[in-house]
Length: 191
Image (cartoon, rainbow, N blue to C red; front, side):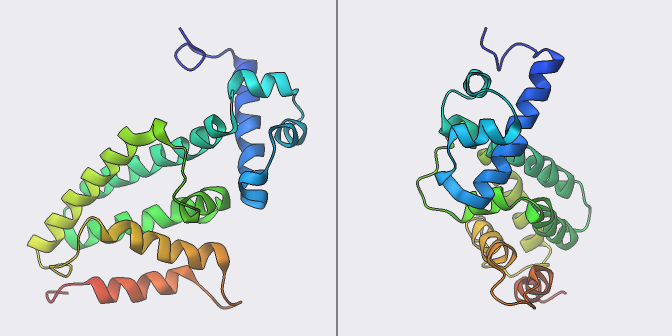
């Protein structure tokens, strides 16, 4: 049984949470240049404790991204339960962005290069994609969104808005305003 399979003791859980919080903060600030010893020092734990929880930087990044994808999976499931197909799509897109709003490490991870060491979250990504596809299909059938909207468009929409959130191209840049503009362009004729 590995550490991730058996329940952690309370102190080990606290240490893991400290590591994830510190790593998230440092990765947001420094990107992949953040070093494991810096993360250990930042969270006030020894390097050995850090490596017991996360044997590599990629494992740590994957844990951070996996946690966020778990939350996004729940957002997609909740959006699927919304009866109105157009509102379901809007709830999905806005919920996804609201969840990422305060997490610049996750924003940076999604906006970063294609070299993403996230092999451990393929199932989560697939589940989100399936939910998004069902929501989009329902919205298209109800003429709530354009009929040429595809599941492949969703990550493009998200990263476009997330770039406004992360990079703040001007002092007045507001991702919520850009979300409203995108939704106006996506809505179907019935809206």
